[in-house]
Image (tube, rainbow, N blue to C red; front, side, top):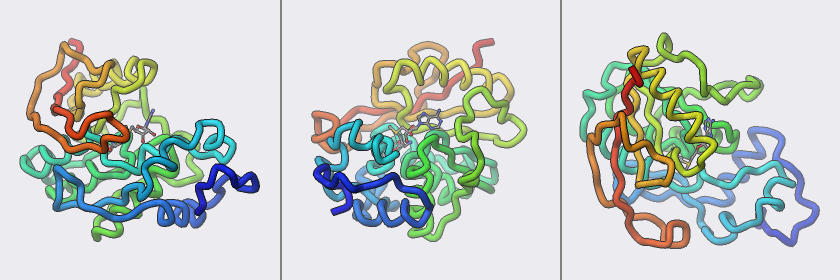
Length: 238
Ligand SMILES: C[S@@+](CC[C@H](N)C(=O)[O-])C[C@H]1O[C@@H](n2cnc3c(N)ncnc32)[C@H](O)[C@@H]1O
């Protein structure tokens, strides 16, 4: 298989074609547990793909494969969007930190006018594009040549009406950047909704809980078979 830690000859993935081949080789398409009307490519072998050492992955230019699982925060947010289509219908939506693109796909199905997806991991953008194509949906992603796939700090209020983010509060450094930026965007009129299963760095103040559900998750990743997850609307600091 492609992801064999004993394969010392492996080299970084360089082209979209190689990334597509990698995603196809390591995933199987399956319905998302809380959102069975959407299927995404999921790591067919959780253990080798996830537990390959970071050094082994980085040697090959591969980030940990966050894109290969629909995370609990993404699942709860996608469920909420599908069940509350007026949130996005006819609007311009950004799936921020899209991973495999589940949330953006839900926005497409709910009738958004236009859905973009962004992630700093180019494999995630490739996986999200493939997942959307499989479902006959369109997620706009930035060009591979564009050097800035980190939108944090950008004023997106003229480009989008709604920012959706699934499961982004698992890292202290990242959350410390995301939360004030989300509040800035909310202050500028953009609606910001985040799906979160109680990750350590999620904000507790200046948010409103819009929805919650028990989400089935892979025990090998989360240490549990379900997580209680919530959709938080993030408000302006002002
Ligand atoms: C836990 S995954 C969630 C993926 C997806 N939203 C879901 O719920 O299944 C977190 C994602 O955040 C992405 N990410 C981290 N920092 C980012 C940034 N500054 N801008 C965009 N994406 C980022 C990672 O590459 C990863 O795909």
